[in-house]
Image (tube, rainbow, N blue to C red; front, side, top):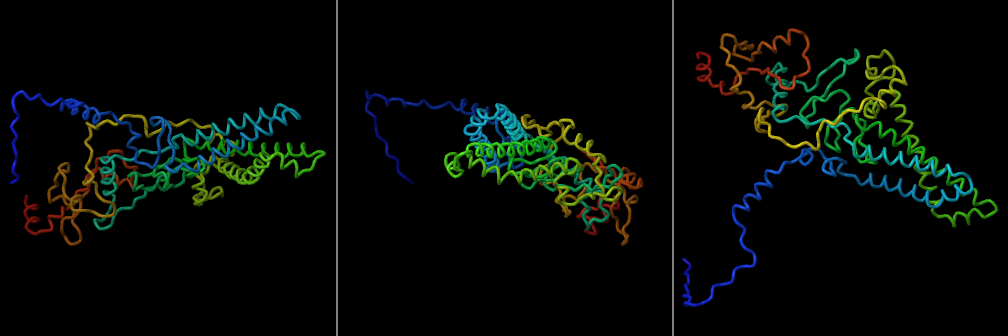
Length: 425
């Protein structure tokens, strides 16, 4: 053991001066930590998708937004050069309407771009652990065998056409019609069109009209600047050498090159989305060939109104839908419905012993009422609610909190002694 040395302090020796920083009381530090721990958090702070939020959750972007900054920079730089070097000459020699028209188009382009980029595209909130567990039980009840997992698809009828709904393993829910999961943002988006890196966001139900307005106004602005720059160079070259004019106006040459290489792709994209709007289709559906263009076909588009004008009004002039993710809402503890632990949620495709065991909420059924398998052993039994659904010939969409469960033989009943005890009880 280490020896300790003691030194005697003679009487009359002044005490050591106090430290410069007084110690913080334990109660004060505990109160500070408690305040920080119980600070109300907003939902955007714990959002599970790959998005970035700004201004306290009011604005959102995809995580990789470098291409969006490039798009914004090209538009601002090209328009700025046009207003600085071409508009004064054209307004003085032709008409003052040229800078006015360019300013209106520039305002429409920037405003529609920002609306597309910073708006919620129509993200669906993910299921809570308790909701995912209840839905998993509901799907599990549809299976006819304990060895084969049930299908993760459902079929609904929309305008007399059968539409298949797929199950999202990430969001733990059946996707509504026309909904798809974006692999870039890791979110399920309603009426998913595509993920556009040029605007830094998904294009979906809540921002498609702004995206269409953006590409349409950008095509007009690009064509207008391109025509005005050519007019500017043509007027300056009257009576002068054309090469000398190009050397004297390098900004106009740069605008000409940018507009020439971008106007073709922008016009093509505008024409393609005009066709989609007139047909009430999405880019995702068109690329996958989900629907046929022939009327009366088995795979005809069930969302089309059979009229170009009606389709355009439905897509571009429809109601504004509210956001479902409530980014600025506070996180509140669910006191009424306790959340299901993650370990209790059954895995997909396999059935563990814990999921097959009888839970306290299931009422035991006497052995005389159990159905028998081919080998004569007690098998699975259906509760009355599920039996009624099966006799109707079709199963409806799963409820939010389904109340049906399947009673299966627990795994521990494989032992003969336990089986005998359970059957005689």
